Length: 197
Image (cartoon, rainbow, N blue to C red; front, side, top):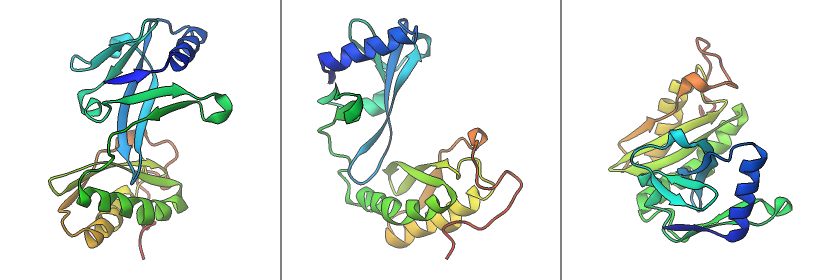
């Protein structure tokens, strides 16, 4: 499935030991995609957080937990450690980010149009997936928990995606908006969508 170079294994074991987390595991999950890259969650977790369906990769000093959905896009991937001054951990993933032209077109709209506009309010959107004409996103930064998130989704994000990619029927927000800590507008406040023209 995926492999970790000896250098990366050693560094991960050192980090876990330094944090007194020797009984922890590493969680690797694909949380989204842009036009050219997968976006990963790569962190230490308590071994008790392992889900029944997780794939467990034993690495000696620690285990790696991968959910089945992420595993489908990690065949042949290699995790390496390139050094602190050179970016730290690097995931070389040979799998195509998108195999569907519609999904790739949606990713382009998110990267080129939506995120530059949302950045004005300290926010962004992560494209999680595109399936059967439905786009799945998460809102981040100033958009997570923002009082105008619903307006931004319907009149901004969804409208722009549908205009550029007419095959899309719906945009679904997967964000947990109760976790927003740097929201541009607090709940109860109303404001214009940063995507409004």
